[in-house]
Image 1 (cartoon, rainbow, N blue to C red):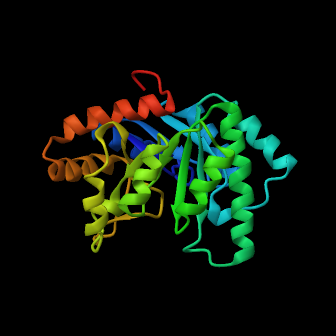
Image 2 (cartoon, helix red, strand yellow; image 1 turned 60 degrees about the vertical axis):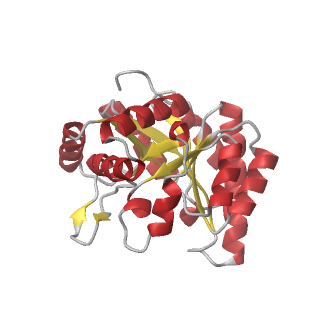
Image 3 (cartoon, one colour; image 1 turned 180 degrees about the vertical axis):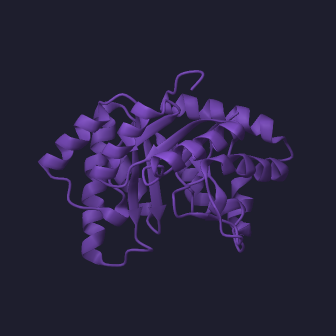
Length: 259
């Protein structure tokens, strides 16, 4: 069995979502974590769990959509975080690669600090997006998020940076970008160095994401292919890798057995 530890299911229309979840179940995916990107999408994510018990919610403001987290926004995040089915603060973080404007960087930092404090206050794990900002994020975590744990989603960094996250108790998410995309051999090699008890599988699937060069839509069911690819690299089976990473996801996000 598998857990897709990071996807985005909010944009799917109801009929397409039902089909997508059915295909995921057929691939052995027993739980999915759908991540928020702003306040409205986070609310939609919470409502997904109300309709689909296998879908768990992350709530938060993505760095690409970062806005200052004022008292009103914080109150709304607090309200959402206390709803049934919310298991993470995410997808949050910093992205200094795609976003080059210095003022936008300041907004990202302010939003992340507010959400680190929220995660610490509520005892929720983080699902973190980090591009070109590992030193800054690690410094913020040490200052504002001591004791908070989580996962670096779709890790993009070097071995030293990964070690620093692991030393802080974080998990590392591996998916399509690290294993399948051409030109990602270094990232694929790095994925072999993740300790088995800190590894999570993911797809980052959404309504617009594609798998490989064929244009086939990427869905949570493709987490099985992620497992098969990584298992072959690590000299094990997809089933064994699925068992281990599912246990990791349940431990980090405190998912109940059988969901």
